[in-house]
Length: 318
Image 1 (cartoon, helix red, strand yellow):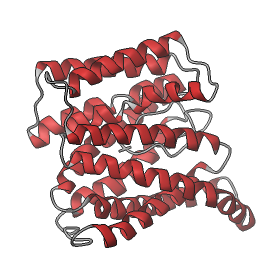
Image 2: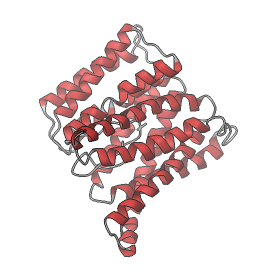
Image 3: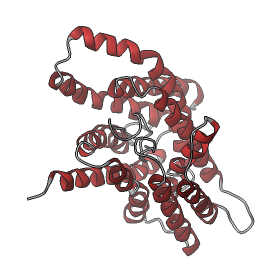
Image 4: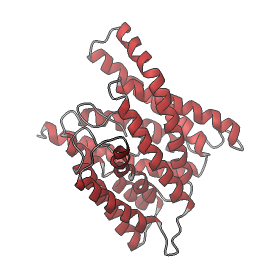
C-alpha cells in the first residue's frame, strides 16, 4: 500500500508530465490558429476548469457567502494586474513555439526558475552560493542549447526567452500577493488574460478566431488538463510532500517536454543541445536546493499563479 508521501510524489510527477506535454499541445495548436486566439480560448477554459475546485474548497472550509464576496473583492485588482503580465508572457511563449520545438521551448521557459533569485537580488533578497552556481550552470546550458556557432539565436528561441523574463516578473508580482486567496487570484488573472487575448486577436490577427476547431484538442489539453487537472494534482500533492521535494519533482516538467516532443512530434536535438538541456536541468535543481523553503518558484508549463510552495500551493506553465 502506498504511503501518503509516495502518493503525493506520484501526483506531482503526473502533474509535471501533464505540464511538460502541454508544450507539445501548444506546438500543435500553433499550426492551426494564431497565438492570441489559442491563448484566449485556452485561458478561458483554464479559468472555468478551476471553478469546481474552488467550489469544493469553499464548501470544505465552510466559507459563508459574505466571506466569498470579500475574497473576490480583495483579489480583483491584483488578479487583473497579474493577468496583464501573464498576457504578455504567454504571447511571447506561444509565438515562440510557432518557430521552435516543444523540447527547446520547455527548457528555455524553465529558465525563469533561476532568473527569479537573480531578480530578487534587485529587491534586496539574499541569494545563496548554491543558487548562484545553479544560475551559472543554467546559463551555460542555455548557450549550448540556443546559441549557434555563428553566435546567433533563432527568433523562436529569443521569443521564448523573453517569455521566461516576463514569467520571472510575474512570479515576483504574485509573490507580493501571497496573502490573498490563491485560487481566486488564479481564476481572476486567467480570465483577464483570456479577455485581453481575445480582444487583441480581434484587432491584430488577420482572421480572428480562425482554426479554433482544428486546434480544439490542443486547446482543451492546455486549458482543462494542464490547468484544471494539473492544478488539482498540485493542490493535493503538495499537502503531503515536502516543499523541496515538490519543487524538484516538478522540475522534471522540462524533461517531459523533451520526451513529448520526441515521442509525438519526432523532434530531435544535437549532442550539444542535449548537453545544454542537462546543464540547464542541473542548474534548475541547484537553484531549487539553494533557495529557502517558501522562496523558490515551482516550475510548470503553466505560468505561475500562486505563491511559493508551502505552506500553501502554487500552479505554475506554459
